[in-house]
Length: 605
Image 1 (tube, one colour):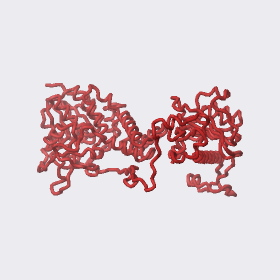
Image 2: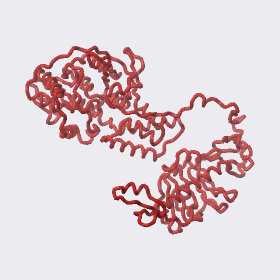
Image 3: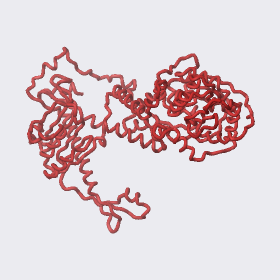
Image 4: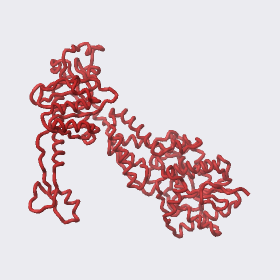
């Protein structure tokens, strides 16, 4: 007599070893394959209908091509039930690995069309990677599962199949977690033969590649990874769900940058990570789903990036449109009972937008290569006045934003007694509605105005922005400016007109007071270009407050220096500002002589 199997802990009953799984989840497929290869049972029993055995094994033979089995919902209905056969499903893995080790396959589910309606919500299966399979199963079984006559009948039919098997052959029973305890109870006593149903017509179809993202339990991108790694000795070591999701987002980001020319900022990646974590927590999960990843991508970036995440997550290399089987487009509503919708609107140019207007004039180009570079005289540089107006307006906006922050910091909220002060504080009143009190606010105005403005787009740790300059305002309403950018005359867009990208800038009023910031020895102690601009802002500002807009706040040292100089740094996170407006002001055009301004409009429209 063969020895009983081990490897599933307390779920060994004589020759039977029960292996509970969550259908469709890759962590269970990995663990099941490992146990099958280690124990090599003589029989592998699965909670699959016996009447599906022939067509199910045919679908498994088509892998890595994904198939779907279709059969009528009942004897009188013409509506079809679709059962996808996907690589990461543990029941599919039981068939594949069972045949690989030469085990006998036993389909133990009764010959009925309908399964009992039992809860199919499981704790996040990624927990198996942290606590192990045995503790996961024990934690699930602590919660009592519903029982009814339909469930007992279903379990009794499966028990009858197992009781009729070879009692001496080591058997691994692969069963759903929600059917485990009813089956164990049914195995404690002999069961009568279940009544048989008339066979239903079956068909095997080929789902369209675009349908996979909706009809599979695991996203196709993960299933493709699993299919490529399943033959490794330990595929679970290489297939980590968060790492696969990180790889998906990186590939989607690269595709997004290629299609739109836009780069994602570090704060956007950080917010996506935080947002997806919160979305997963709302669903009582550890890891986000593809739906969560797409929703976060749309909320933090835009619909174009969300579309890239969704389509890449739905990609599966082997699935093609044309095979020997009929190709059918399926939707989630045809496969699952509960679904969620997410509407994405890609912003792509419409055909009418691509048509050139009647008065369209093409942008001027060089008649001969190097013509514009040869016209550079290098005697002086100046700005383009329309851009000066835009940047000055944005500087005033940042000052207004900073003043509102100072006001909010000085605002005091108290219960209404005899005066409304500066008005009713609606938010605080609603928050403390249970106290039945009215709250009012008192705004204490901050003395002084906001002086210099510093905007840091990139701290330039890699020395990409190596063009350093300081220029003075030409009239009383134009700020002195110091900035670092890419080399403008390395990218000529007209004769004597260079195009650059700001890395960071400083603006300060009144004008015509600023010396060369980049060669001032008083600032040589700083560690970066951004800190040099901040130090100059503290030095040249005639007002107490200085605005510093950047991805991260300045070092504590500069708070101390500002306090010593009688200044205050107001930090504005760059992520709280409009990306569209930041993108608009980040481009700067440098002219090599004031005379270039007259004809610059023909090249900069």
